[in-house]
Amino acid sequence: MSVNKDYFKTFCKISKAIGSTLKRDDLLDLIVGSAIEAMDAKAASLFLEDKAKGVFVSVCQKGLSDSYLHSDPYRVQKMSDEMMTNGCIAFEDVASDERILNRQAKIDEGIASILVVPVMVEGRMIGVLSLYTADVRHFSKEDIEFLGALADQGGVAIQNSRLLHRITRNTKLFHDLADSINSTNLDIKKILHIMTADIAEAFNMKGVNIRLLNRDTDTLDMVASYGLSEEFINKGPVHKEKSVSQALEGETVVIPDASADERVEYRDAVKKEGIVSMLVVPIQSGDEIIGVMRLCSGEAREFSEDMILLVEALAHQGGLAIQNASMYLSLQEDKNSLEKDIWSHRSWF
Image 1 (cartoon, helix red, strand yellow):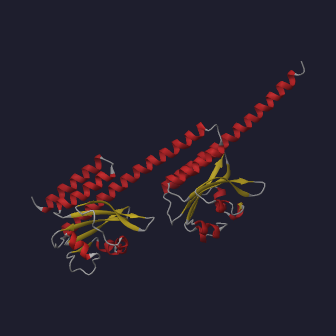
Image 2 (tube, helix red, strand yellow):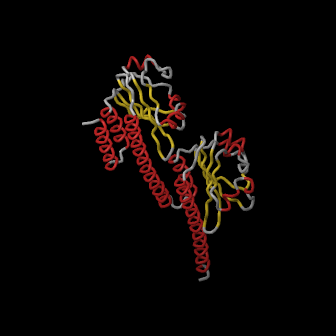
Image 3 (cartoon, helix red, strand yellow):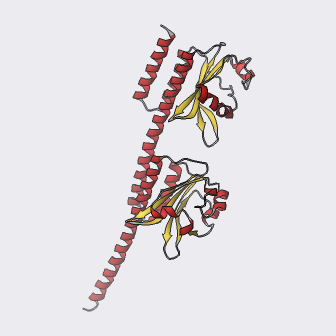
């Protein structure tokens, strides 16, 4: 059987696996193992980007010893431009290639050649797939295309896993909020605190807070907060006209750099707190905007469309909870007043 047929057979096997399972780790393990088998290699490793640390870390590998140390994790990031331009980086002779780092460790591990290709998701490089051979090897066009196709399949597996995670997370958030509303006897402060905590943890935010409009003072008063320091929370009154006023007009606002954005009132405090990006969502009760929910990220962040839609929906649920609680309190007041009237009338007899 020719190499091309082997490659085709392997590619079909992985495509079939992706269509039959959503378990990311199993699929990545299959991709790494298939790369080694089909290309008669010594080992392979798949690295994914760790955004928080700004590095690429190995998430799946086969054929390498536990003691083997990969190159500087920042190295992959530095080589990303070359990979995006050429589709790969090839080190055909580890012993003589001047670009190689940790050369002796690779030689001791029995590595002679390395081929690295990018893992892409929606046009962005999120990692790399590295292949290691025990013999010095010239990588053909077919080799590079095949390993690139496997990396693409890895991207598909990762994307499918992320989509499933988002669906599960979104469903859980809605379920938890509905459960909170139904199980706390309309204790609105408790409901809003649970909502800020759940959203912060689900979206890996530094903090989330909810402020409601005080029409007597034209300020936004804190009613729930999670993850933010007491010093930041008590930094001073937040004025309606000085704090992302578009949100009080019903517009969701994305702020990429909160410490430099003039729409943010306490920019120095925001910087000191370590807040970088913010998402500000209006909270509506009936036809009226009654406050805002702010999601604060400790790193520069882009907020996806589906995330914004979900947070808007959750904020709407929070507004409904406030509205229901207000109606409940109003009914309780009416009931108490009616009972007083009844007892007052009984005293006449």
